[in-house]
Image (cartoon, rainbow, N blue to C red; front, side, top):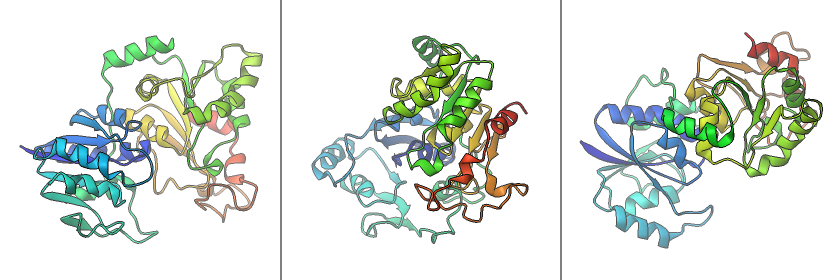
Length: 335
């Protein structure tokens, strides 16, 4: 059995979409170790095909050569192959410094001398869906049928739910954040209206940056129905958040990393798209409903501006999100 090191991407959604690649590599006999930043590492611990996860001691910005050299010395001689999933120059340094003989990745930031096997980056607008993009690094074909799959150990789920005071399938998760910007976020007032129309508690998940956003959603609901919305933004570990999603009755989210997590767990969900496109990064689950006004022939006037992929609406109206009503999301949840 050969040993392979996977250099993971830095975003949760991208990490989820690498799972089919890892499943392919494991199925052909490669023993997999994933090197990941701490906020992504728990996603890889939910992939049974991964033997080990190494948390990188790197921060954003800079090459941090001293830290990379130190880690390279510790892992030297352990791996036959490295798969470098990010496109940056610094992500390809560790496999080179560790002397890993076969180093596979896409052409990126001046990486010709760092990688031994290089795939051409598809031109802008021609890139395939992200699962196929990552899976192509395996060298296999027929990549379009793969779906990411995550699995948390039942005992770990039970422990996390006990810590959070939750019970299986008795709540709906809202993930109202989107790191990219407000043009990907369904309005807080709409989330509040949806929460008031549900007959079960709502669990709000997100990072510490999204605490105020989640409180904006929860406050008007709890004023009318005390305790209906539980704001856990910034108060959970990623492992606890993964477990809460895995055990939820349903999930409502924007196009975000937690959307992909819910899809990989197979939880019934509604995914709301605005400035981005579900043609490129959809939730890959038969239990996912996607709402995107761009593809609605009955919506008038048509959204000729979508998808714009901007952080904020260039036209100032954000119709693509504002015009998706809470009633419409509720209808998609109850199908």
